[in-house]
Image (cartoon, rainbow, N blue to C red):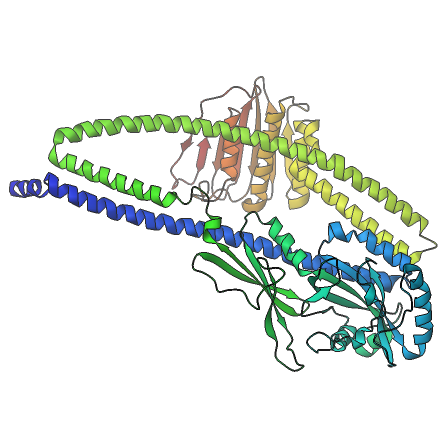
Length: 622
């Protein structure tokens, strides 16, 4: 043994041990650097995925809103016959496209005209359009055909005036593909027709856009079969939207800069019968002059591609961003800091080992110093815990205050606006009951939707902070028990010794939230058939007990990971200087007992006692 000790002393000589320590510290530091760099990149990748999915959802939502505008316009023509140009103008103007649907550039209506009706139709359109500065209206292109699908209305009226009179059944795309096949399929199915390629829209500056169309059928005619839909077909409504405006709006909502987005669509071939091919419809870094495809993904970039289905046309949205653009200023230094920390920590541990091996006295001094540091750390930890509890109390107070403020603002603003809207719609329903039955039916449906919305607003207000809390704790407890019985079907008995408990708002709110959490736990987990709530007041304390006859807490259930119900109750009671007890036995129910001083500014020294988990009775006191 002595020989081994002497050999160790010679081996760990100062010169040799310094080299070993440096090599070991360097290896640990490099390992820390590698792990931290990978974690930093993983965190940035997760932020990238989150932002990409948010942008993807925004694209889907905007495309759906455009389709909704188109369906609403089709409903206008299918609801009211003989829409005038002025009525169509007011309808589109009411949509407020520039503010509500900024990507939509134009809305139009094309009327189906038979060849026998062409002279009368051209004469009527010429008379209507001459006042708008469009003389000599004729169907384009010239020539006689059996029927025409003629662009009759277009809004805003300053866009695409040369579109007036275009026969969509004779329109040919720049690739040589005729649109009647798409329109015929839309007419026969009643579905949405969409252009597969971008088209130039005549705006103050040329922009690339896509078009959508929906068929319009004669009011009152059946449309169950293809033949019936063909017989009832009277025209179609169309909508054109800017790809750049759509995608640029999505980019503006992203919280980071430097994101590059590309929109790739599967389009028809240049010659009928050719297979579909990929076409880059949009590139955020080259919106006006982009190549046929996105460049390859670089090693220093994050990349993700998500599908977007648009009227049976499959798009792909590609997202890419430089990894450095997702790193914060601190992220660049973290790996180096962990390298230094790993190096220094390993060197210190190694030096400690050396010190222990070389000198017992040094080890004793080091142990004493470490003991002092641990005591200081314990004291610091206690101070930190105290500050964290103060912060939690402050956060809870702010949360309740915000709930109260938001509930009040919803009630005062949104609630009053909905009530005023309901009154106006009800008046409209009364006035249209006899003379406009179709409009009255729509108004009645709208009235039902407003009533449903008012009910939802009331439920949201109650979820945030029930107004009944302003009436006192007794009224709030009565209301919550009634809500519990109605939603769960479990009878609940309430016992009170004072019908007018007067306590502070913070104390009343805490007791109400504790009751909410306790009843929620009963409904979700207890399988109880009976609940008893006691609300008692004595000279200086208010107590609340919630007991059930359910299955009780299972061993280890109170400290189950991810379960914060009882923990939240403990913290609420601790913040008010109260006492919290949980008594439970498997199969014999659970009792939660809370006692809070009436003067909730007094702070009681908290303590906690737990019986062993193998004991079937679980009791905790705080």
